[in-house]
Length: 340
Image (cartoon, rainbow, N blue to C red):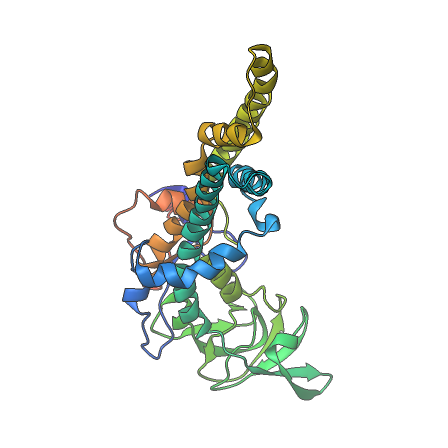
């Protein structure tokens, strides 16, 4: 397996690929919803409003190729209104708008499938009340109000309100919702077993935890964002292809811009609608339309197999993986075995 998949990425030794299991309640995500095809009618209808919301230029600009098509759609529509009898202009406008909406719809459907898995992750992230230490006393505050450096107390049955380090005490913690490990693990102050994750449950004793992450930036929050596609990391190939498509778009834009002088010299006239249609035919519109959806679909393919990819490189590397060999905790370790 590629070392990119096996590499650890943060201080909590969280694997780039982590098998995901639901909370100990035994609830499993609806396979029908997550595994439905791209052209599932229900998914298409549900994602259609989101596809229209993505017509916002602030969203479209993130995809250079489709942003150019969006501008062309606006221009051809304006010129069509100026000359309502020009059926050619109306036809071109309709096809361009359909192309833009199709691109947005493909991405919206892929994101929607990821949100179904994010709902199962949210079940492990409950809105807990934290017992924050203030001097020698305790005060109860919502877990969302905790800041970096706050000290909280957790006893038997408490849900740990946020990511942090144990600075006092020792306890067994149920981390099955995060790691898939069915047996409790020991967390104690000092050493490499002091890190705890928000959303896990204390099963014994009492510990004092120092919060190390801001609200909304915990491990589960990051996983939810990645699965939903809201903050996903693009794969290296996706980034390279984006740069190539943007470069080709600029080249063809310059090529089309030089056509009117040649047309005038030849004694003919090229309308703006014709120039826009030619530009859209030349630039790699189809690839640009599906690029982001393909990236999200790659992560969704792993999610269907209960594996959460925490980086774009991991998604790419996992494309060639057919079998995962995991240790008893369900994590993929570095695998750099050494003997003395």
